[in-house]
Image 1 (tube, protein in one colour):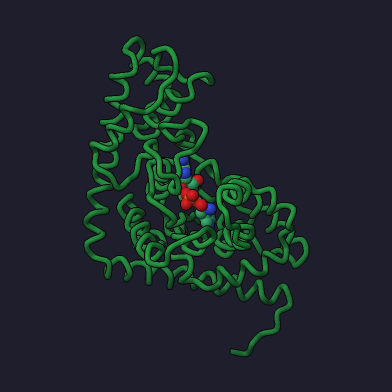
Image 2 (cartoon, rainbow, N blue to C red):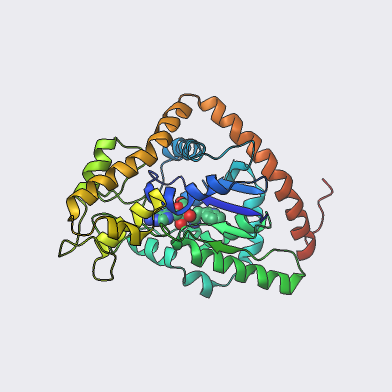
Length: 327
Ligand code: TYM
């Protein structure tokens, strides 16, 4: 049984890409040694609103539970509740180089898109490395866009181990076979994203009619064949979505819709997506009615996570020569 950690930023409205790329798998594969984290500190690296941050942190936790995470099985917690994350991040920032951080796609994209670039946006991957390394995670289940951050975590861990003695487990990213990179339904050059307001984002929190409309109006490619191909990025994305949501093979879907055109295909896809999300949406609405219960679950999760994090942090402090405080 592998030790697992993964995280999600409470930075916007969660969408079907988050569900298919990450959360569905987290729920399906959860075990006692798996930790899932709402990374509120990461959501502060671009302009944010404090009231919204608070609200979204709780809401994101509710979505994770609605997707099927069971706090009696795995550990669900909020990153800022375990202070060792920021402490470890400082030490790791002393081992990471400016050069490798500057190469991160996430940093390049976000710093170009905003008028203000915080220093924390630059050190963002170091905090992510702390999230992972504090728990000795071997596997990090994520969508495709997070591979680079996990690679960096590995590099930093290796460098630390080399300089200060074997301390960290080297993690690896695990991405799903289909659904690792769901693209925006209106722009197949951009991945579906929490921070983009787009008619091409299927939000978890929306009416079924909105989801249906977005899928029916999604851009398709020239021709009318339902076929995955490099010159058909729109249809390929829809096929991928269909396969991820139903567990069917892309090839079988192509065979099923051979000669039918896009209309039937989209109608069935909308039904499949809404069908898969229906129980999740219902459960989320229920969970939101009891914020005190959610907070209690998160407090318990933080206690469990802290027990591991403090012990790793004690080792880190000792390895790098920080004087014990005696406290
Ligand atoms: P975040 O919050 O952007 O996304 C959460 C998870 O959803 C996946 N994902 C997608 N998968 C498929 N298609 C998409 N269009 C899509 N968009 C998002 C992401 O790959 C991710 O798995 N830096 C991380 C959060 C983080 C983290 C960690 C992850 C902080 N610490 C430690 C793993 C381990 C992020 O911003 O994810």
